[in-house]
Every structure is written in structure tokens, then in C-alpha cells.
Amino acid sequence: MIDNNVKNNIDESTLQNEKIEKEELLESVSTVDNVIDPKNDQIIKLKIQLAQLQEHERNTVLRLTAEIENIRRRNTQEIEKIHKFGLERFIFELLPVIDNLERTMSISDNSNTLLSAIIEGIELTLKSFLDTVHKFGLKSIYEINVPFNPEIHQAISIIESEDHKPNQVLTMIQKGYILNGRLIRPAMVTVSQSK
Image 1 (tube, rainbow, N blue to C red):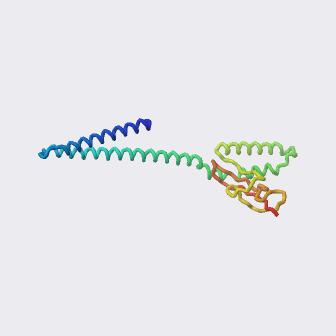
Image 2: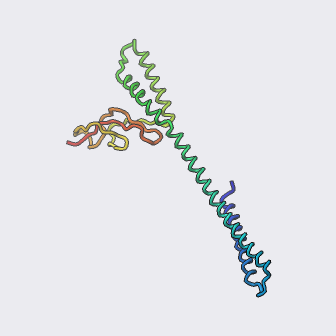
Image 3: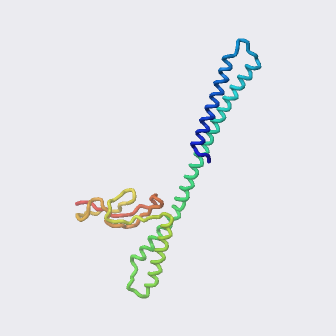
């Protein structure tokens, strides 16, 4: 692509040349003696008309070029959005699988030696699964003892507590998830309230 400064300089010099030509044509028309040759008069009018058409054509080309650039930019942005959020529905369907694996890990009995290999396998599967979805921009919302944020939290119940500040997340009932900055599922939480 041509550097914008060079392009602007070319455009400005072209405009100046066209203006000078127009002025010369207009001066030549005004300085013609009383006796005007009809052929010369027609040539001058045609030259003026040609200059006007050329200027109009140049403006049209510049306008269309700018419009094409805007279309390219918008298409690039749309493609980026599609890549970012194309997985949203698929990942949303995977969230119950993650929840179930996490529940399995939370209730597993590590003291049972017969189940320890199975539990370890489930733990490794969950870790691998989470690593994979994190690569695609999925982040979980799981913090407790943070201020309640209605944009990412959904309050399931309110519990009166003297030990916590009002509107603090006390417990996490279900994790929430964000995909590339967009909320997919809010975190279901209990919230504190002062007595």
C-alpha cells in the first residue's frame, strides 16, 4: 500500500494542478476578444467540462476506495468475533460435564485404596479437560469472600451474618464461566446481609 503521506501529497499536487488548469481555462475564456471563434469557444467549454468530470471521477474513486477499506476492516472484526465466540454454545454444553467431574472429585473418598486409581484418573481427566477449555479463553468464576457483582454472580440466597461485610459472596453453589470476556454462565452464590 502507498504510504498515506505520499498519497496525500500526490492528491494535493493533483488538486493544485487541476485548479491551475481550470483557472487558466477560465482566464482564457474571459480574455477572448469580442470576436469569438465558435470552434474555440466549444473547445474551451469541452475542456472545462472534461476537467469537471475528471474531478468528479477522482472524488468518486477516493470515496469508493475509502468505503472498500471500511468494509475490509468491518469484515476482519466480524471474523475475529466469530473465531472468539464461535465456541460459546459448544463450551456451554460442556459446562455440566465439568460440574459433574468436579462434584465427583469433591465427594470422592481418597482413603479407599481400591478407588484411589479411579479417583486419580478422574482428577487427571478433569485437569486435562480444564486445561483444554482454558486454552480457548474459558475462565471460571469461583471466588468467595469477594463483593457480590450482579454482572457475574447470581444470588441464590441471602444469609444474615455479623462476621462478613454486607453483600459479600459467602459460598459458591455453582461456578460461573466467562469465555473471552463474555459471561456464559453466572456463578450461583449465597450473599451476606448484615443483621
